[in-house]
Image (cartoon, rainbow, N blue to C red; front, side, top):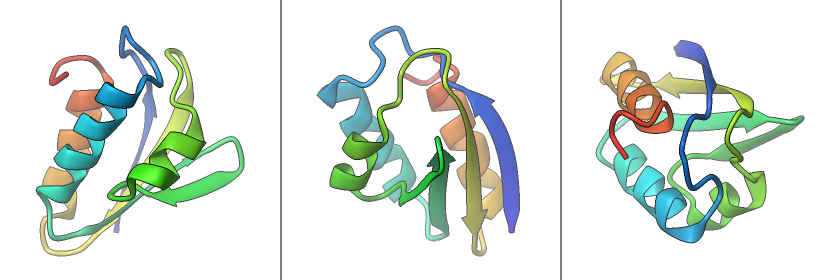
Length: 86
């Protein structure tokens, strides 16, 4: 399992489109990916779960992935949330 703490740097925060794009990014990987913030842990491939998390700019969260491409998955999510891949 690979884990990383990430600070959200998306300009548009928790709007629907960035979250949908984040779910698409997570869905590229075979690994099981979870995002945890504010005491909640949701599947990064679930649009409803991600919408409920409230990914506002500046939020500190933990991304964890488990599977054959876990390191690439965490790196991809990190790139997206840091604003480099949005």
